[in-house]
Length: 358
Image 1 (cartoon, rainbow, N blue to C red):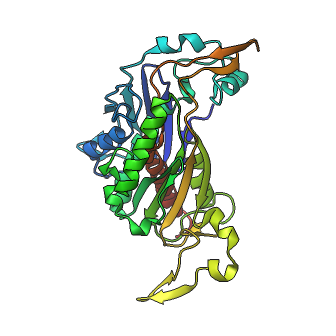
Image 2 (cartoon, helix red, strand yellow):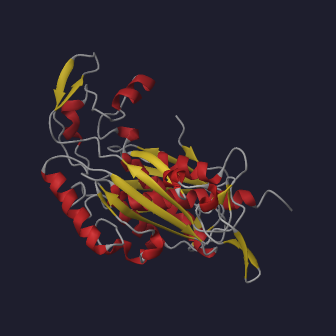
Image 3 (cartoon, one colour):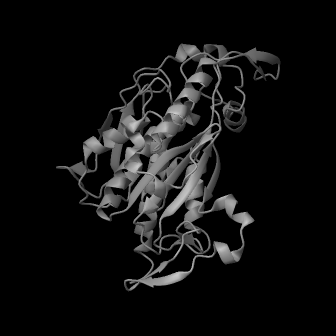
């Protein structure tokens, strides 16, 4: 089982949804970075369950404890170990599905691969494991802040309710002003109403999270294997419930022509830049200094609190009625996960870029 993410900056995670704790070890973190514990905890608070009426009712403090690699408020360059204790598991909610395969979950594929599975909340395949990604990403953000690189994600669509303007038209600092994490406050109300309606029907709904990376220098990424957009895509597609990724104009660009999609180079105040940014800040797999923007599609949560046809581990037809506490829409809690995965990719590539020439 692969449990490590990254090259020079590496996160190795451990834990299960209903286990003792979720945690990790970070290698390759630069020494001398001021570690803002409040900021890191805030990133976890943005992800934690039970934060609003729209999220799962599971109540977890998700307080992170650092075990190594930090001294007198600064990173030492040594491995940074951390853990977040699970305190509010209700494993009995999963007793009725211990021998069943939940539709569109990882139950069947995990069991087929390993011959065993932890049915309590999905075990290792649970989205709760993204706690470790948020800690790693929060640390990456602290390093990127010194480089004046910022990352902002936001909910841009829930179901058929979508923002009709690009990110330039919004004040992204207002994203967390509502429980949906959408910078358009009116659309956010509509999205919240839809999620509440779907939740009352014991159903779920998906949507899209948009993200923009600003201040990224040119030169990050590789021209062959390791293209920056491919790394970002892999990071996003590795998040639970993600079904799609596009960057720049993405699929919408296929209806245009090269004459309208190309980004002309200009000299602006002595610096080479581009007049437009249809490319999304990446050309030839390498960042060009423009904003990097992309979108991530999330499917409706697979756990629905209504009867579903399935089979047991012997292949016998049966009906599953799930119990427990689940999100009706993952997007509000997934916004910080998208940001933090992007942060780890960018910091890793920044460090790698320091090795390519003297």
